[in-house]
Amino acid sequence: SAPLVIAVDGPAASGKGTIAARLAAWLGLPYLDTGLLYRAVGMAVLRAGGDLDDTGLAARMARDLKLEALCDPELIGRAAGEAASRVAFHPEVRAELLKLQKDFAGQPGGAVLDGRDIGTVIAPDAPVKLYVTADPEVRARRRWLQLTGRGEAVDFETVLADIRKRDARDAGRDAAPMTRAHDAVLLDTSLMDIEAAFDAARRIVETAR
Ligand code: C5P
Image (tube, rainbow, N blue to C red; front, top):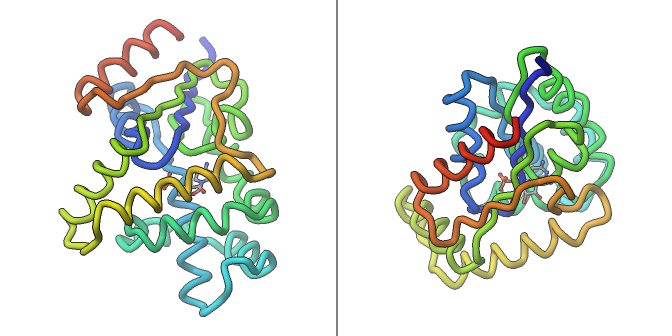
């Protein structure tokens, strides 16, 4: 049978990362959180003292990216998420990261990837596509709980404003904008806890494959 590739897209704090990781564990498939690639590039630019709008610098950082950089715990912070969205805007950066992601999706045994453009650009032929979303207020609350739980002092309104700004930038850019692929199944997790969301995702996979 054809390799099982599962594309999971959606906005920040929708639950897509947890769902993708759990689907991968359930199916015994390799998993790639593609947001980490953009986060690592953004942090590399910041650490070099560079400007996130500097296309050439960001593209070089993407080209020179080492996989070890993906283990940096700083990558889950607010600064990295914002920097990621800024560098992800540049088509040149996206082009540098394309092969690694396509190769990952093309593994003979299949794979699970999550991001913004997996179902549209990275793995348009994936047999299973999910677009995971939730209301901005719900996502902001989840992200706020996560950040304050890690000891990052930030108020809810700031997190909500960050989420709205990032959604608008990710959905509004010309290069591989965040969007639901026409054949992706929509999963709105606004009223679901993670168990319910994973159950729903598992049913979608079982139906689709
Ligand atoms: O998913 P995560 O929040 O870690 O992604 C961080 C940022 O990286 C996103 O806001 C988006 O701008 C960018 N990204 C992207 N394409 C992907 C994954 C992430 O543009 N496939």
